[in-house]
Image (cartoon, rainbow, N blue to C red):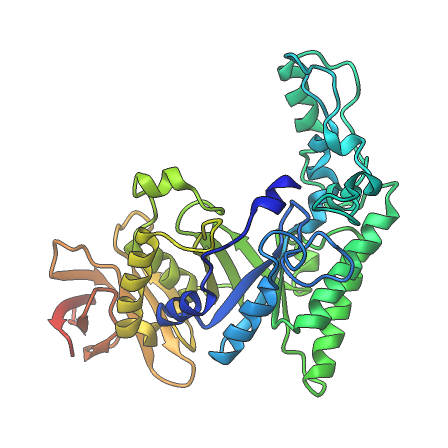
Length: 413
């Protein structure tokens, strides 16, 4: 809770950031509603531990929502709070070794009354930490033993609701309902395997769909995403593949979410210039688009609300690529095959087609080669304009009688 208080986002300039994202090609924008720390980044009526009362004292979701819609973007909200009931149980534990061995951490005893005349006056720490749901037992004497206990208990990724804490489940539902009804998101992301918290997850998904239908005159335009669905449950929401990709063209639209670095800002990663290259992200983007997917890309933000110099450079370079090649991405649909060449080929051809027009193709070409050939059964003889995956270059393709498809770099057609 002290971290929540210390976080100020004092240099946050959301208008400038949103303009950078739009210039880099964003067509929809996700804002973090909450994470496993159980802290809401919106004006929550059912969770006083939120960014309008603590820390930045700003409605972060509301600010992003306004800016996204002013720029014509669809708005998504990501919800990661369903696991807080067990993920935060370490706050009720204790050091098994050292001078404070056996003394419970503050969450074990803190109550609402303890905040009188302090910065958290009127707020109950138990609502933030989730309550004593799965507390490490007394008597553990070594760090190794404590780590083993956590690995087999409160660190298990468990979608079931807590057995003896209906209040937590009810409040989670009300917080989600408040988020949906107050901000009308076009997309809702649950960081869960299928849907969270048993019936509560089903109920809030149904509420979102019904609310969205009512707002759009009987048409469902809202999207819910979650992960790792069993085959019999596919279709309940849009499938999300975290830091991964489909192995083939999927019949229904899907999404991958990934990051240029760590999920949360890492100064050591910046200092060693360790972000993924634009080339790497572009290859992911085209591969995902060729398989009927969408890419949700995270740009980590510092605690003060800014992004670093390498992230600025990344967005500028991605913007340059999108300005030249976006027709191979926006509004496209999968082609008959998503790639040509065996998996071991370093630079396969990935293909998309326009929604109501001819095929557009994109190729990964080696920077050291100006020409590339591979067998192709999908193109007829002749020459036509092709889309490109190289900075400022166009490509022509031509198929000869032997069935070889040749690509030639040309300066900006």
